[in-house]
Length: 179
Ligand code: IMP
Image 1: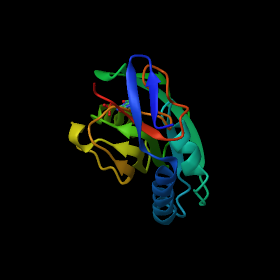
Image 2: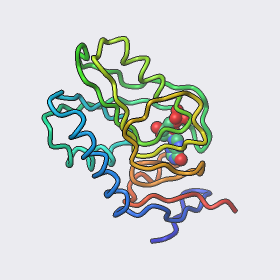
Image 3: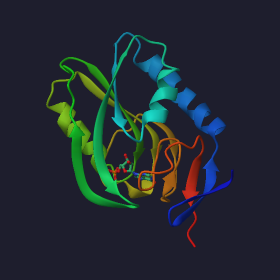
């Protein structure tokens, strides 16, 4: 399936599952190496990171915990600039090594908001793991230590990412076709 239609937009496959999993494995290896002995708490940001989180966590071999938070910042294809926290963080983060697991860092505003929120809860350190980064769109200075892939500034769906709620289920990543 090289082309898919979601509502008014057409998308073509741009990153196949095999390539995604290769990069996810690389990131998992880096985390296993860097955070050994730290019992990290992975905080997965729903909904977009559910597939990345599952594939990443299957490859994490060090003792760790995992929990989920939920935020919303997007309506359709353009950022509203407004970042809303929908489900909060319930864990005790004091003294913990926290790893935020995100689907994509676009402007970085969502990530900045998360860092600010988590930072008030006394963690020892916070690391960022993201499936994708759009470096051209970054508006804030973030230390993104674990990024599976860097992509151009095009709208994508699949592997957890959506267009208006649809497209999260595809195993490959698709890029919008500008007609
Ligand atoms: P940021 O706050 O601008 O960095 O936006 C981050 C959020 O926007 C991500 O967690 C995604 O939910 C969403 N997002 C950004 N780019 C895309 C995209 O190309 N496709 C689908 N969702 C995206």
